[in-house]
Length: 233
Image 1 (spheres, rainbow, N blue to C red):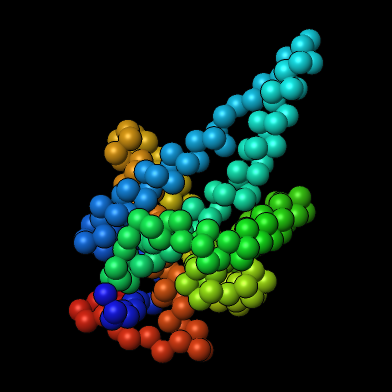
Image 2: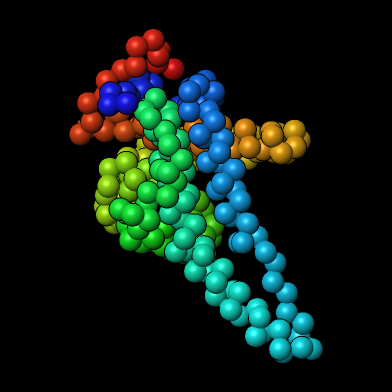
């Protein structure tokens, strides 16, 4: 699909979740569902709990390489998949063509940008959390758009960080409350077991992609084209 569509939405928590819910059940549903399942499976290695018996130092022979692998996996592989997942949902919310290969496109064209951007965001967030927690939450909210900007606008890592900080000025509380709502959405999904969890993850991904596009439309350098029939909320 060559047509480019944008949202005619005022950035809001309710509007983002509402539009995300309606849109994710359209044409891109199966692709987005598969993307969430694949990404969830690929997160598996990070959930392994490595335990060391202090009485048996030989365990370090196995634990240390596994820990190094987990660290490399978490910073050099998984971010590419998660950035691709976010971009895939953004394309779905735009009613653009969605293909599962988008999950892996970052390895081909944006690998260094993704890895560096993820490292910078992680480092700044951790530093902020050390400084009495609240600064870390602020940093996490203000840099929430970094993955979209790297994938969507092909920005370098620091450019994406600076752009996200600029874009979220005045929208930080929206990002925060969307994160809080997402927690309850996932809890509700857990109550409904596996299927509910997958749907809840799809929903908050769709909502955040919608918020990004809505805020992007308000940027000075953007000229949004409204979607016919989509009302402002």
